[in-house]
Image 1: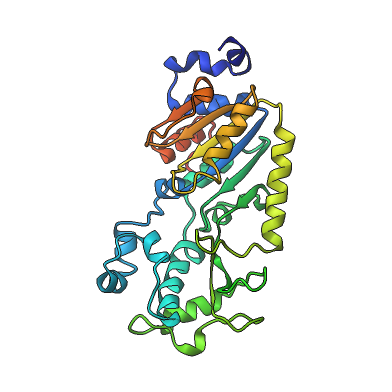
Image 2 (image 1 turned 90 degrees about the vertical axis):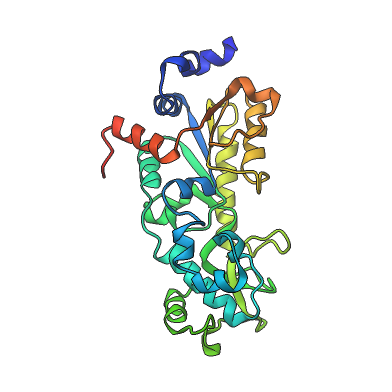
Length: 300
């Protein structure tokens, strides 16, 4: 433990610090920050997939299919492509094109300004765009709700048409989009779908996706041997192969690294990195707001 404390002074003083102060100090002490963001981050800033945000937008779909949350609904096999796009067009407006700026994202961006950082996220909403992040520092490994792909994955290209999405929402009736508004693949003629990874089919990974991955992997290579903070924010255990498990492995491989997990759920931590793990279980938005305010950034 002595070697770790030499690198991370904050660890020896945690009993006297708030969780916000502790995280702030660890960020300041680090040479590089690798940030993994899951659904808990968006939920903490109000972009939930349950409750009124879901029931107000999709009462007809809930009544017909007895859906219990928006994530389940977004993966549901609807009866035809017209119904699929009736749901997905509303979903895309709510969670991408019309999703407002999240305060937790703005605070995070301001907290890490000036640090050497990179982000990987399993979220597919527009939160990073809305908070004006440098998108060259964000790897969206699970796709984007604002993009489309061929349902057959016949070629590695994505598409976007916000105007058509808005027209679908405006003109749909009885949970159906007019047939003439359905988007089709220009290569094979199959219907298009939202660009989102699924366990069964994966997803289309276009040139932009591969560029995002290249920049992220290049950053990871540059952090080897550095005092690196692996900061996991609101990441559950649904797809641990993208953030949780890699972060834990990289922490174990680098004796100078620390793993910080921000989550109200107490997930298993491998024994090898427990001395170098910090768990923050307070509300994510509250913690970031407290740090931002202490830096004179709050209230923007």
